Image (tube, rainbow, N blue to C red; front, side):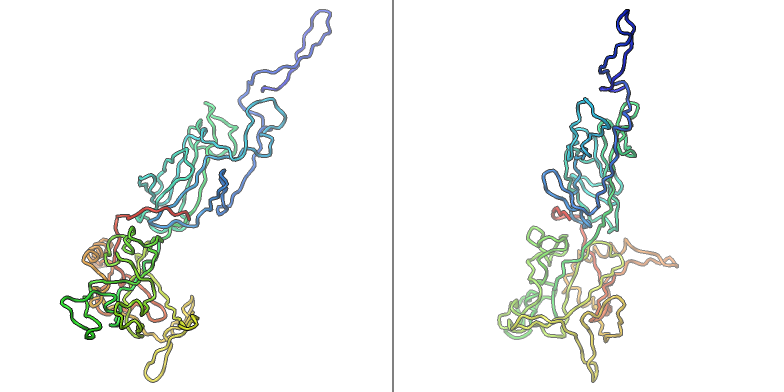
Amino acid sequence: MCIGDTYKATANIGTVPPTIESEQEVTKTITSPPDSWYETITVTTPPTAPITIPSGSTYTPGNFINLDYGFQVYFPNVGDFYGDGGYGLGTTSRDRGKGFIDDMNTTEWTRRKTATFDFRVIYDGVAYSPQEEIDLVVDRDTHDFYCPLANYEAISAGVTFKAYATNGTSLDNDLPANRARGNQFDAKHSGVRQYNIDVVGRVGNLTMLDTGDYRFANFFKQAKSPVSWIIPNVVKDVELTAQNKVIGSGIDIRGVTASASTKWLNTYGTVPHLARIPNKFPLSPDLNTVVALRNQPLRIGYNQYMDIQTIGNYAQGGIQIIPYYYHLNLVTGVVKPVDVYMQVGSEYKPINLFGNAVPGWNPNSVYDNFYTLNWEAEFGRRGYTSAESTLTKEVSEYWKVWDANGNVINMPTPQGQSHAFGNNQLIQLTQRNRTFIGSPVILILQLRIL
């Protein structure tokens, strides 16, 4: 019997009418409300749908998380309880406490909130391992995390969020409403929500460190001391290992604007020759430090010594670069794609056809004018320091394997004088093109909401 119910009382009193009917309220004596008090309404929210918060702002769920970058989770204490306006009651009632609304703040009824990730994260300065349940600050709606470099890239990595009621003793979310209670009247109405998110790396910090064209020798490298000359009184002879300027991007590999605070393109502090303001691509003659040569563009046929950096799963190397070539009309500014040919004997053969390298393409459609890496001759002018050499050796030895005869085989690294790595149509970078520059040090932590 519940508050607001009525009953009939019958009594015989002398000569008065044999039956007296009265109606009165009584104290609630049952612990399980009738089924008519509850209506289950399933609300489905697409995982990519924007979420509107009480302030009127919106959050758009991300598609991925970047390695070595921050991300933000929106986990509010808000519930929609208004339903159809009937307050879950099958009939009218004089009961109080029916002020349930949408966007209702549930902080006072939330005992605990947690998050669990399939990858390592940092939260409030503490590092957590994969599958480790992380207690969140209950009265906080937004939570800032960091995805450290220690993670692998992942497709559809699992993420689980949980909320526990103040009078709940464990995670029990198998019922859509909290009608059923435990022996201590504890609620069986905790919440669980699961997501999947990709964890991805990056490719970036493309830089040009030198060229075989002597016209730009003094731009890229520092002059020898005492001074000697490549071209008397025009181009000074240079130290190939002493960087002067670089061509590169204004955005570093983490997607952050390159500046003094990011050490420019020396993102992890291990490539000091990149800790300088980069000149933006392309290498144009007006950048030349030799005034007399500022009308002399880079000539065809010279090597360009370039580096590119990666974050993520590149244990086998596996970087493909497809070059495209364009003609720029200096008068009209019109840019047109072009095909490239070279003379082979008495005929011209294509070495790069615009748009040719697509899935299923025929490699025989172009002449195989292959690229080679002469590491012994080039490592110095590529900024390969003793520190980078030591780190590369340590990583190579760490990932060693053993052959069938028990011989140790270290992970391949650059070596030798003639390593072929593709042609003018498709460049294939492998382990033989790769050194290691990583560091456990994070220069800055900057939040990105994806």
